[in-house]
Length: 219
Image 1 (cartoon, helix red, strand yellow):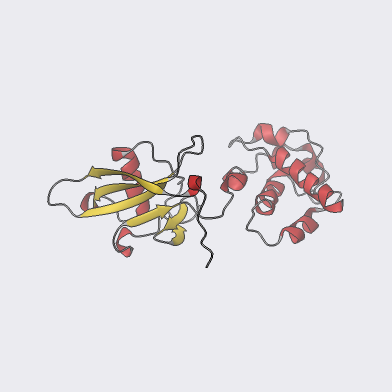
Image 2 (image 1 turned 45 degrees about the vertical axis):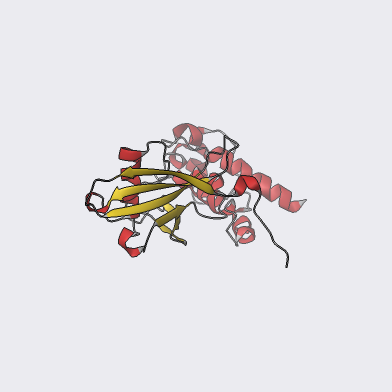
């Protein structure tokens, strides 16, 4: 039988153990995947011990406590803490879920935390940060003149977020929906949308990427 092993750089090695507990406390262990892509070191699993009675009930509460009180180098994404934004999605105890809605007590034994598998998160991080304020669309002259037919930068940025997602299975249909002389191509790259965005996003760049994808599809 053939035996396959991950490349050495991808094998997770044991990390360090950090304790933040006193005697006679209810100890919970959290084993967290750590990796710095700017170094050549292998990823590792660092283990943290917390007093469960001084920590909130959710896994996100434990992560925040670890970052604030034990290890400030720990990095993770979070926002609403209400199960709405999806920022704190991660693999917990072998299941992809939200850290803000996952109870620590739902996990037996050590709580093992990994990033989501097989998701090219960097591709969608910035487009996903749109807060739908409409500052970009209302700053766009093309949208002023053709709001009934031109989708506008906010809608096109949202379209790009899904089209660039490697998990999406409707890319063709999404490109079909925007391939139109007004819906997409009424953008003249004036860049007002990018200048106006309060989140420092770049709708103009996303629109240019959509045009490039449509051109490549024709070739």
